[in-house]
Every structure is written in structure tokens, then in C-alpha cells.
Image 1 (cartoon, rainbow, N blue to C red):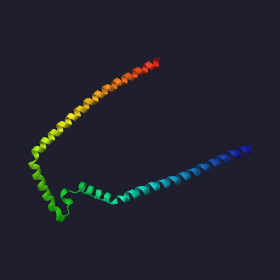
Image 2 (spheres, rainbow, N blue to C red):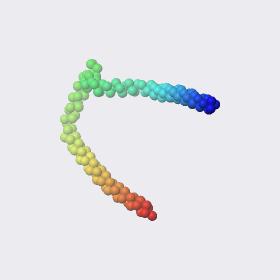
Image 3 (spheres, helix red, strand yellow):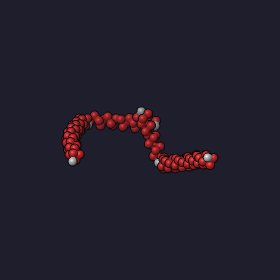
Amino acid sequence: MADKAFSMDFSHLMGLVLWGIYQIIIYVLMMNLLIAVMNTSYSELWQNIQVEWKYNKSYFQAEFLDPLEIFPVPFRWTYYIAKFVYKNKASSGRHANKQDHMKYYKLLRRLIIDMREEKCINMKNNDLKQDIINELKKITNLK
């Protein structure tokens, strides 16, 4: 009886020790994996650092600054020239531009209606296909 108790205590202790060793190994492997992933991400970001910086700078300028404030003080006159040219160009081509917009919206409306009709036809066909499949299953189950 004493032999059996010793054997159970020893096997239980060895199970706990092996489980602890397993947990330590998994912890070390996961930490190495985390370091490797972070290193890869950092090196990819470092390669594109100039592009990322320029993108973020222009994004925040467009998001939080007025169009006039984007240019530095000595170059703000270019903003006024561009605004003047844009307004003159827009006023001369408004009528043609409006017709182009109407053509675009008519075409878009027609495409949407066609897509709806196509979906309805496909849904009807899918229902028919499903009914045929269900009937075939019933027939095979009866045999």
C-alpha cells in the first residue's frame, strides 16, 4: 500500500513538473514570436518612413487646416489665383457640366434598375432550382 501511495505521489509530482516546464517553454516561444513579428513590422515601417510621414502630414493638414492655411505666408497668393481661375472656369462650363451630370445620373439609374431586375430573375431561378433539388431529395429518400 505504501508503494502505491508513493507511486501516485511521484507521478502526480512529475505531471506537475512537466506541465510547468511545458508552460515555460511555451512562454519563451511566444515571447520570441512576438519579438520577431514586432521586428518585421518595425523594419517594414522603417523602409517606408518618408512616405508614411508625408502621407500623415498631408492628411492632418487637409483634415484640420483651412485651404488658405495650408500654404505658408509668402505663397498664399497662389491660393487666391487658383480660386479665381477655378471660379471663372466653373462659371463658363456649368451648363455643359450640368448636362453631363444628368446623363450620368440617368445612366446610373438605368444600371441600378437593370441590376434589380436581374437579381429578381436570379432569385426566381434560385427558388426553382431549390425546389427541384428538394424534390430530388424526397425521391431519393423514398427509394
